Image (cartoon, rainbow, N blue to C red):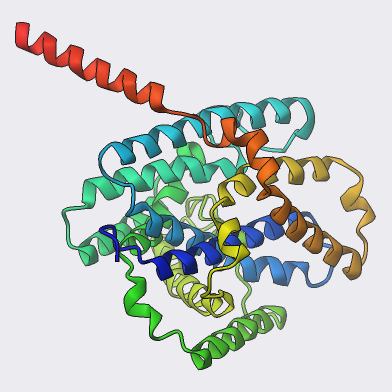
Length: 351
């Protein structure tokens, strides 16, 4: 085991999981325009949204233990900040010129659609740094309390991704403290098959109408007032949603291969898929594509296309072309930071 607590087998498993989750992210966003008119798409959408973002944040927390502290941690924070500035600018410019998404605030203080993840990732890391001296269970309990209380704030939850930062914080903290070594021995073949069966049963329950959950609760982006529940007890609904998301996420693990493969390598490059697939989805939305999708086979073609494009966006040539934007160098910022601290120190000595 490494000093970070990430074992090679744990890294493999979670990279495989991360790739499957980014497939779910792409598919979920691709089928959203079809939910109201193609049978089955709303079921798939709800099934995906009950677990994919909570699990994605969990995996992000798991890998954060390798680079939360020190210069590595500062480098990640600076890189996330640069990614946010770059892609918030690109998406906002394209929205003004081409996409024209309803209800969009073109402001650096309101992340553009999927870019909420970058803003929240900054928040999760900073919160984990502040809480790191607390016992893990205390961190988790505190984060759940914050998530429930945040829903009562009299603000628009999308600003600074405030709502999602608090709503998903418990998953980030849980991932940060998670030990794959303890869990690995439980993932026997029988357990995996049982988990797959339960996940499919959960999909079946959704299809039968036994899980009528308003999508807004699954997005985590709105306060209780925005969700139409300003009542004092609305926080109970969010609290009850966590066990459901935990169940849906755990049983999805049954689909995750444990061995190293090409999927593992693609799992290393999911950030490229995450930041670039939004351009494809938005371009498709303003094209005649969705108007032409009028049957279930055509909708399944959209699903297949999303899976294929997920694979394509992890290709080496895509990474070579887009890496200056996706992984901008921050060494120059670190040098500026060190120079600024030296100047402050020198000023302090002479004062």
